Each structure stands twice: as structure tokens, then as C-alpha cells.
Amino acid sequence: MTREELLQDVAYVRALAEEGRQAPLLGGSYLVFWGVLNAIAFTAHWAILTGYLPYLDGMIFAIVWGGYGLVAALGMLALRARTDVKPGLNAVGTRAERAAWGGAGLALIAIVVGSLARMLMTDDPTAPNAIFGAAFAIYGATLFGVATLSGQTWMRGFAWLSFGVTLTLCLFANADWAYLYAAIGSLLVLAWPGALLLKREPAAIV
Amino acid sequence: MSRFDHTAIDDVIHGRLRLGIMAYLSTVSPAPFVELKAKVNATDGNLSTHLSKLEEAGYVRLEKTLAGKKPITLVHLTKSGRAAWIAYLNRIQALIRASE
Image (tube, rainbow over all chains, first blue to last red):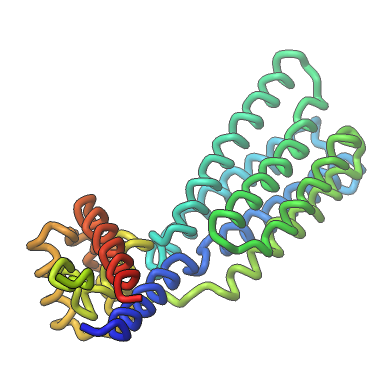
């Protein structure tokens, strides 16, 4: 074995290992789904607050957010079936992406449950307004972490955008327009990077 | 004796295709058989043969499962496989240094 042969082998090994390390992320469809779904729900919430949708003694909120939960559950099942057959499902970056967003989802559930409980226990209808600011902070932190771990550093720009949305939402949480702002923010920091990831996603090979 | 001792290389790993398999599994594990086949540019039979050798050495583990309704074979890099891979890379690095 010559030194040149060894170097060729090392180059081959490096190329294949890099292919795995740089495998495209598979979370694009999830980001688009949640970005659009959030935008629809936030816009509907804003429409109720501003009188564009009937109030129905407050029942409309339950209808909008109950429907949101149902569509979210069904959508996640469909998306999981779609991504389970993609190549690179167990690449380092993709595993980091799944773990980070999984943790983010649990954090969001804790915030939603806590805020709704506060609304019911203290009869404070503004309690759920604490949710979206925290949600965008979590989106930003997760985007930042995934960008770093996967080497897709372009996603950090969307993380900073999300931190900016958080700042505004925490400042104006009780303003009616904040829900419309959150809808636009969802499209910008979730659906937009999701669409970019989808464009890079490999076709199924199984 | 020369410091350039190629006999110290792990023969189970050091074949072009097996090198490729180990390299890809080091960053994507488990990898579906068809994905691995595409990455290392091998035929079904050729890849199966080399995977059998790696499996005999305990470096990989094959798992037959279902993706939806489709049967697939997943190839896992085992703990001893990862240890052997790291040892192999260290050995190659030492050989290259020795030849400089």
C-alpha cells in the first residue's frame, strides 16, 4: 500500500462521512405546516377580538383553538408517515433537529397548559396572551440550536427574526393587533425557512 | 522495522466498499439498506456480502422492520463497530504521519 493509495482512501472516507453529516434536514414540511396553521389560528383569533368573526359568548375561541388542536394532531400523523421514508432520517443533523423540536413541543405544551389553567383559576381572559411571546422565543432558540448542530447556519437569521417577534409580542401582548402580528411572524419564522428546507429535501428512496 | 506498518490495519474494515459503509454509518445510523446502497454505489449482492463480513465481526447489526407497510432493512453501526472505526482512523492517521 502506497501513501497515495492511503490518501485516496482517506479522501473517499471523508467524502462519505461529510455526505452523512451534511444530509438535508427533514423538518421543512413540519415548519410549513405549523407556520401556516398558526397563522390561520392567530388571524382567526385577531378577527374575533376585532369583531370580524362573531363572539358567540366566547365559544368561538374554543371552536378555533379546538379545531387547531385537531388539525395539528392529524397533520403530525400525516407528516410523520411522509418523513419516515426519507433518506438521511438518522443523519446526525436530522436527529438533532428531531430532538430539538421535540423538546420545543413539550415546552410549548407546558406553557399552553399553564396559561390556560391560570385563565380558568383566576378568571383572567388575558392569561393566554402570555403564550405567543414565549412560543416565538422557543422557536428562535430551537432554530438557532438546529442551525448550529446541523451546520445549516443560514437558519440563524430566522432565529434572530423570531427573537425580534418575541420582543414585540412581550411588549404588546394584550393589544388586539398582536395576534395578527403573530400570524405574520409565524409565516416568517416557521413557514418561510420550512419552504427553503423543503426545496432541499431529498426524494424518498424506499 | 519501518514505522509504515500497513499490517496493523483492520482488514475487516479496509476494503473500499466496507470503508464506505463504515464512513457513512459513522454519521447516519441506522441507515436503510437502499440508502446505503445508493451512497456507496454498490449492487444488492455486493453490499450484502460486505455487510455480512462486518456483521460477523460485530461491527454492524441488521434489523428487518417495516416502514409503513413496506419491509425495509436497517443497518446499525454497533458500539464495537464505532470503536473499531475510530481505531482504524487513528491507525491510518499514524501511517500517513509515518510516511511523511
